Image (tube, rainbow, N blue to C red; front, side, top):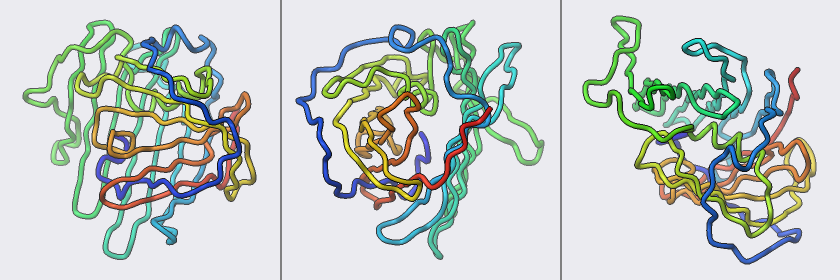
Length: 268
């Protein structure tokens, strides 16, 4: 669902610096079984990326921990992914936001504001973990507020359900053993399960922010977006305790875009 209708992210050729291994069958797991209860990414953490379409730079993207909010009396980290830019004939300005509670990890709200060419989407999902349900709400510009969808109300969700951005952050906390795969059935929309995260290899890469030793993972959602089955996305994380995302690549039918880290702020 991240940038569902974007131009896509592409896999470009790069030399492998080592660490290839045969991929093992996915191990069924739950995030709470694998990640530390301590949240390591403080409010204010910000990564900014150059975005290219083929050889052409088309914009900027930002991935950040914006703040700590309160959703239905529960404190939650507000995590956002933004991308803006485009080509002369196709402009893009997307913002996707997740509200993630910790102890245990669970999504409380997920919002999409997409402006891509002539396409518009402005909706959010209220994820009630206590009730075990999710309700979609669409923005009504005339009323200036969200209104519940007529049919997608009080739909059942798995316990501890997560959205794509929450999974992206939690993947930074997984024990990334090369060749290992994890299977999760915790995506908040039933048809998005299972979520599979494959740990592919180690690779040394260079981006505008510098040169990094990375671990490469492939997150796969049963959706049609950047991390869907058709996207073949690869996420490059620093091979250290920070697990900083320094590059994202994917290949889709509509074209290819690469994201390269330009600047990073660690936050408070």
